[in-house]
Image 1 (cartoon, one colour):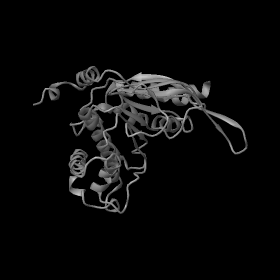
Image 2: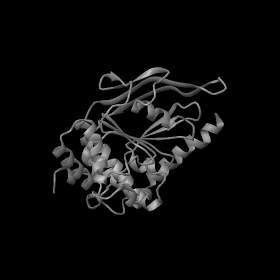
Image 3: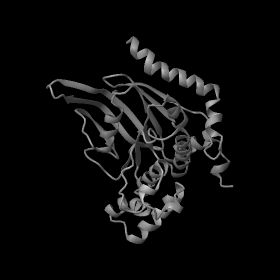
Image 4: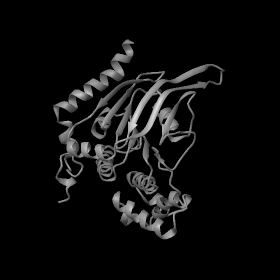
Length: 282
C-alpha cells in the first residue's frame, strides 16, 4: 500500500494542502456590469473577493442568474471585470490560457476525430511532440476509464463517456486550475454519481485545483473542500463554508455513506437556507 493510501480523507486533504501551499487565483474587488439592449446598466456581480488556494475544490452555488457562470467566464479569461482584478501566478487574467482548463456542460468534442485525437488536440495546439501527445492521451484516457474507447468517434459514446473524454482532454494540457461549469447537469442520476466519485479520485491523485459551478447543493457538499454561496442578483459572496466530511472515492458506497452523515444533513440545511430563505428575506 502506498503511503498516501493509508491516510484518512481528512489527513490526505491536509497533507496535500501543505504540499501545495500557495494561491492559485486571487479575486480582488471584482464587479461586472452589462448594458442591456434597452441601454440600461445591470450589475451582475458586486465586490467579489475570493482567494482560491492550490488544491482547493471549490463548489459555487446560488440561484439562477446570480452570476456563477459570469464569474467562471472571467476566471477563464472569456470576459473581463468592469472593476477589480483576477490574479493568477502574480499576473492579472486578461484572456484565455492553457493554465486554466474549462470543462463545459456540453462536451465540445470534434465529431470527425477519434476520442484519442480529441484528447490530443489541446496538446497539439501547445506544440507537444506527437509521441508525447499520444502517451499523455493514453494515460489520461486510462485515468478516466476510456482506454477501450480511444479509437471511437464521439457520436459512438454515451453522454457520460463524452464528458469523461472532455475531462481527459483538459487534464492532458496540465492546467493549474480546472474550471467546471455544471459539467454533470445534463446527465442521469446514476451517471452523475459515478462521475462525481471519479472526479474526487482524480482530484486526489492529481493534486488539482478545481472551481466547480453547480445548482445541486448535495453535489457541492459531496465534492467540495469549500462551498461558496452566492446571493441573488447582483451576485456577491454570501458564505464561504469549509467542508471536512470524510470521503473515499474508492468505496462504491461512498455517496450513500456521506449522505447519511448528520454533518451532511446539517450542511445541506444551512446552505439551502442561505440560498433560498435568507435571500427572500433580504
